[in-house]
Length: 307
Length: 229
Image 1 (cartoon, rainbow over the protein chains, first blue to last red):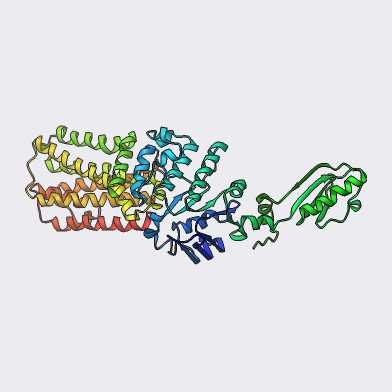
Image 2 (cartoon, each protein chain N blue to C red):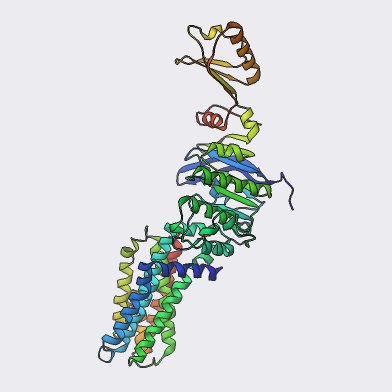
């Protein structure tokens, strides 16, 4: 068995084209065994195109892609039994039942079912229902069930929770965490940043076909300034504030925003000053950067580099 | 894998009422009508058998293959299958196999009914086999090609019309006796001539007829590989 941390996917200078339009313009990243790697970005950033290249559904226009040491497009036959794929669209024929699809997939995926995947995804009671009568959430779960059938060592999930209610989303996350605990490597795309923040070990944010940010989740978050916000009582101006290490912005609304790399120190200085002066800072908020902030900065083109 | 895919496809076909009616009931009903009501003694049994084969191949194989493949592509079912271990050829074979077998079974049953109703046994059975194999290959490949240029399953009703009528018209002309060589350019002609020759008709045009059928099947296969994604 291969060691944890070994490179499972290696992408170098990947370029993909649709006619004249270059959707992916030179993307590099790697995915290591046992981790969950999140591929984020706005619509049209090149996430799904990149995913489809990794899945072997399209040939890259330029650059190299290795998946489990193989070329995903040319060595499709050898890779298929080792990779589970959940596409954005399920691609279920409407008139088959969940049980029939699971049985069919047990043959065509190239993997033997080792457990009752329908039961695992809480679909056991719906196994004889035709796909067209399943709810959207149930279909998505059936889709995931087929992708994890036979325990592939590498799993591609393209927006697995889009359109799910919060409870189904939570259940999907639990299943993914279970698979990670069993050693499965997962590549995930999602529009829900809290999903990536709660599941991902490492990530890349794509913007207009390029990697805008990449790295370990903790590093990416740490590279972003934290924020302190409060309402400054009239008639004070920001000139009255004590020395802070972060940048201070006074918004027309009267709210003050401090972006700082030293959240605890600046907050301490600020609160001590307010205490001394007998001031009440309205609606005070202090928080570390979230993936939301990273994402926003990546989109607005602010330079972010994480180790 | 092919068997599993084929069984799934057969279930899909039979569970969709419109598709099932078009693939099974229509050609069976038409074939029975040709055998029992057309008075084969008068109109000639070769015409009856030719029509039966053409309806089996035209409706059951050609139209059904076009509709089914288009619907599966529209559902993104084919894309899903491509994420599995089956190669594209295996996927396509699995999806086409039940339709082809169904078409063959119908052709045999209907011809059998004609024999029971009074048609003689074919004098040259090997030509019947050639007509069956060529007709199946042609209609199947043509269906794959037509699906390649058909956007939605509903549109298949329109896009299948030209080839279907060419097939039937050519077949009727072919079965009626000697034809000018250029007429063999119409797809069904070779099939009709082969059937006529098999049932004791003139055999001098068997060569061009077989060639016409083979070339059409090859052309349809080439077009299918070019246009079907």
